[in-house]
Image (cartoon, rainbow, N blue to C red; front, top):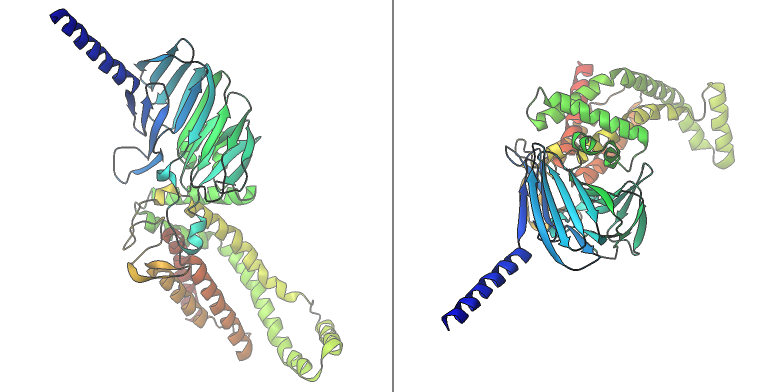
Length: 469
C-alpha cells in the first residue's frame, strides 16, 4: 500500500514538472529589450526601451500583449530549451523531438534580433492593444496612426490596418508594422509572400508568412536614425517615408542640426527654439532675395493701383481686360508679375515641411517636458475643459494662442512703405486670414511642432520692431 502511494506521489510530481515545462517562460532582459519566450520558442511579449531600459526619461513600447511572433511547426513533439550567454548576445535554442528547431540571438544592446529556424510551417507576427495609436483630436490624429510597412527593392509601401481588402506583399527586404515612433520589422532569408490582415475598423496588425528554412532578422525598436542604421541601412527608409527624396534630405539635415544644438543645450524645448533661430539665420540670404522680389511686387502694385482702379470702375468684361493688358504693356509689366512674391513661399515651404516632419517623428521629444508642457510629442494641454469641442477636443492648448498672437502682432507691424493704405490693409487682412488658418491647423498638433513655429513668429516680430526702429 505504501509502495503504491509512493508511486502515485512520484507520478504527481512528474505530472506537475511536465506541466511546468510546457508552460515555462524564458525572460531575456538586455539594455534595450525585455523579451518573453514560451517553451516552444514563440515570442510572447516584447518591450523595447529607448535609449536604454535604465536611466532617466526612458521611452518604452510594448509591441504585443500576447503572441508577438508565433510559429506553427510542421510536426508535433515536446520542445527542449537551451540557453547560452556570450559577451554580446543571449542565445536561446528550442528543439522539438523530433522536428523543428528555433535559435534566437538577442543582442545585449540594440534592437536587431536574429533567428535561425527549420521545420516551421508558418509564422504570425502580431501587434496588440498596447501598440494602438494614442488618442488625438483634429489634425493631430494624422500623426497617431499605426500601419503595415513593406520594403521592396528600396521602395517603402505603407498600408493601413483598416484597408477593406486583405493584402499580399512580396517581402523581399523587410515587412512589418509601425506607429509614429516604433516599429517591428522582419527580414526574410529570401522573397516570401506576407499576407496582411486588413479590415474595416481593424486596430491591430496580423501578418501571416509561409516559412522556408533559413535565417531571419527582426528589428524591434524606435524609428530613430542611429538605431535603424545600426540594425540595417535599409531601415532608414522608414523615416519620412511619405516624402520625396530631396525633402527627406532636408528632414535628415534638420534632425542632425537639432541633435547638434542639443549637444550644447540640454533642454529639448530650448533646442527646438534655438533650431528655429538657427534656420532663420541660415536662410537670411535667401530671405533677402525673397524680400527684394516682394518689394518689387509692392512697388509695381502701388504704381499701377490708381490706373487699375479707374479701369475697373469705368470698364467691364473684355474691354476691361484689354485695357488692363494695355496698361501692363505701357508700364512694361508682365501680367504674372505678382508671382514673384511666391519666391519667398517657395523658399520657406520645403524647410517648413522638413522641420515639421522631423519634429513629428523625433522620438527624443516623446515624454519630454518643457515649461508647462508635459510632453513635447503631444499638444501642450494647459488644462482640461469641462466639455468637448468638435475637432478641437477637450483640452485647452495655450501654445497655439501664443503663436497666433505673435502672428497678429507681426501683421500689425507689417508696413511696406511702397504700398498705399488700401493695398496695405488688403495685405494685412490676408496675413490675418493665414494666421487663423495656421491656428486651426496647429491647435491639435504636438507642442514641439507648435513651439518651432511660435519661435519663428517671435523672430518675425523682433525683425519688424528692428525695421521700424
